[in-house]
Length: 252
Image 1 (cartoon, helix red, strand yellow):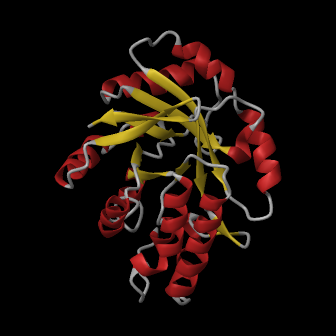
Image 2 (tube, rainbow, N blue to C red):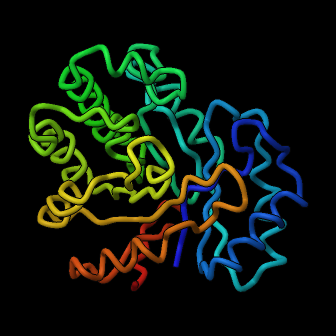
């Protein structure tokens, strides 16, 4: 199986050197992955050694090692993002929303702000940003689609209604949605996106890929087999991998 959301650097917790790359790839083997994708945060661009990943990958012919990037979408910065993406032959690019008007809403210290305000306001603002990210033409994958729920603050309005425009944009742009297992280890304690959103995505014909959002090697491939089982129960028989920004169907 595959895991396309792996952070070699974490949050600058380690260097991008050959030994650390090997540690992540060894864990990919242990997790029985066939395809692993490194997608560090774009804010750490100057610390990345993307060519080195491909060099070390030659030592692991049994693994399909992909080089991606997770980009924090910011409205108005589409052109600098495009220039960045054009500077390296990525296999895929994940578009994510981590901030709203400069507020990094998923940071650990922000839970109280979520609790004191109308959740519908933040959900609308968040999905508006996701819609713009999807419509930008910059990305292949939308990461952790409902990240705004991270602190388990739920909207009063049905989330499917709040997310409808973003979902339409994803469908129109032919993008892939990541099922991200890291939500289980946050206060919300469930995958991103939640099941009823996965079900409506299936109805719309939106394909899925898989990601652990591992910021440490031990989390590579975490819970991926469980997600595959869930998808099979929904009669979904493939997920999507990438190479040279072209999607590849991979049977579950």
